Image 1 (cartoon, rainbow, N blue to C red):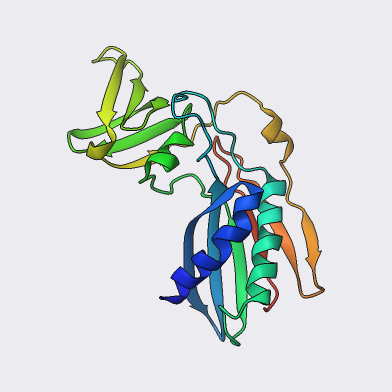
Image 2: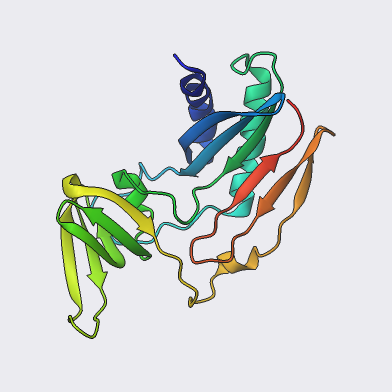
Length: 209
């Protein structure tokens, strides 16, 4: 089992009680240290399979901060990272990250998404994601009328959330400033808010582990 696989296996049971799943793990050199990046997102396993249209709220800054502390504590307590120092970064997936799985697409219902599929590329409002298909609401253009596009998930190669600059204010917009929290005197927890339709919320521990 590789280090990345070991990290994922170590963290999954720790994040599950927080209602989170591990989306991705990467380990890369950073000078004399290693940079460990962990992407987390909402666990939607308990979402009713018949519910294909309700919006899934993005992770809050507090949720990402809680995940960061849980991940940091578990990695420090385990021997999965060995003795070499490392820097830990925990974040939620941001705008532009490819959507490949059904759950990744389901979390984006209500957002503007570009979908690349076997028949071409369509960009529209993702209105529903079921167990085996999705529905896009494609806006009218000068040449074509508005239309609904239904795609089998098996034909979808990837999706990408599109940045929207005109949006309705929501409660999530209250989190518009970064904040720091101490971590064992060795670093801080930085939660950065990206002011786009789908915020990229990051919580990083800059100290050595």
